[in-house]
Length: 171
Image 1 (cartoon, rainbow, N blue to C red):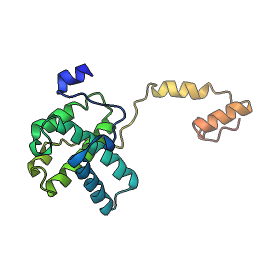
Image 2: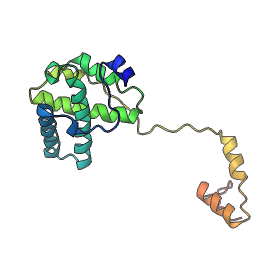
Image 3: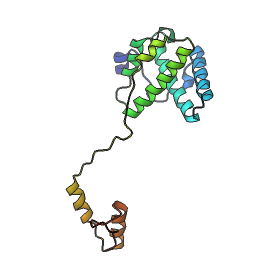
Image 4: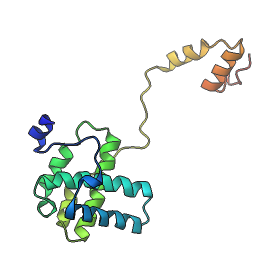
């Protein structure tokens, strides 16, 4: 926590964040944000997650002067706190922040230019997990399956569905 404070000027609560930790006007803003999400037809899970993440963002912003002083520097400081998270987590958090800032801008709570400071995070849905085995090694593994017994036949069918010759594993 001390390291977070030294780096970011705030203690980041990475665990147990909830909207109910935000109070007063900030809590009212988040409640209106969630109501807007519901009115826009967002899923219940999206409303809950975005509300929680908006609460996290607003709590951070309140350590930097509140929404009225929100600028690119504060957004950048918040983004810096996301170091160490998985790409998909950062993507979700920044999508929620972008949605919240868009809402806050429409409500006249923040300058519309702040939205440009929220960086997009693009992750490919087609990203593949790299294989640790080469094609020759995979072939040797499949050849090692003993298809002479029921377990080997099962394992071969579950693994590849076919024998090396293109026929079902029924030896």
